[in-house]
Amino acid sequence: MRGDVFAFVALLVPANKAGPVTGVVGAAGGLGGFVPPLVMGSLYGAYGSHALGLVLLAVVAAAALTFTGTGVRHAVTRRLPAPQAH
Image (cartoon, rainbow, N blue to C red; front, top):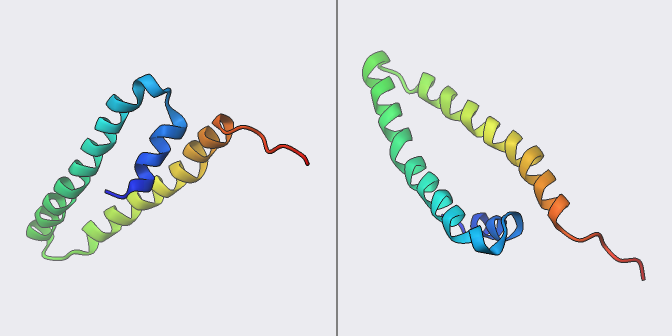
């Protein structure tokens, strides 16, 4: 998993909760590498095509992009101090 994902943890959660949240993020990454191949294989076995699995992956990616672009960005900007005028 990329280090910048874990950098968000430091920005979004209090220091005393960073360990458990980092564990959840790591678990989500592990599941992300385990579940999609199973789903793709099952859909290919059922339909003989990767098309439905690829569409499903695209929908999940679009939802993750939307969540990151709105929810995470809002949380980060809320937690960061405002820039100081010189």
